[in-house]
Image (cartoon, rainbow, N blue to C red; front, side, top):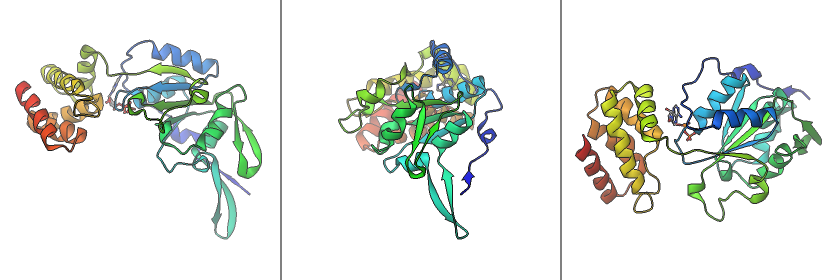
Length: 270
Ligand code: ADP
């Protein structure tokens, strides 16, 4: 049996990612990391959680292994499995096992989407034990000192089925993320896309209007990510109303009336 692992250096982030701090998140994450505490990032989609993790991995000089969780993701997908290769049965580590061995940062994005059995492997890693049960190998893999577990969760999508249990959430240091304040969001949008500050300002205003529609027609307002997308289209000479429609409105909803209402909002600004 052979342990096939991806070289951890494949996940090192070599260049400093552009990240604008929104509060004390950098200091708190660093303190949690030094104390071997796992971290929970809470917040809506597209508000900077992934970028923050890339920035922290670069800052702490640790490899980052990100897993986007989905409803078919099982504990074996995270831990690993036996595969038959050329007539031989070999063990292949999953991404979580690779991070645990290599002392990397494992970021499980949208953890509540994953199958419930994933919690069985996450819990012992997220408390004092810091060990990964590898059921199929019959071993308990102790985490390297530099290993860090981070998970994200969007409280906005909460439902009885998709809620994070107290027994899970109470293991983590939680950092709350939200859309950056207007001035900061303008800076992020123009830095990421190269559009003029006046355009960034209008896009942020537009986003705020859509965020006010959350709950009355829209499931979520426009995220910072969508603003950056629209800004990039505008920087590539797409007319702003069309850019807002394709990059923002159509991404938010399929409802014809809502689309018309959102288009009116962008026409009133641009
Ligand atoms: P999430 O992981 O929360 O869904 P991302 O981290 O992918 O969101 O953020 C989406 C985009 O928004 C990023 O690619 C980046 O362009 C921009 N962004 C959001 N917040 C920040 C920030 N604080 N600093 C720099 N860029 C940001």
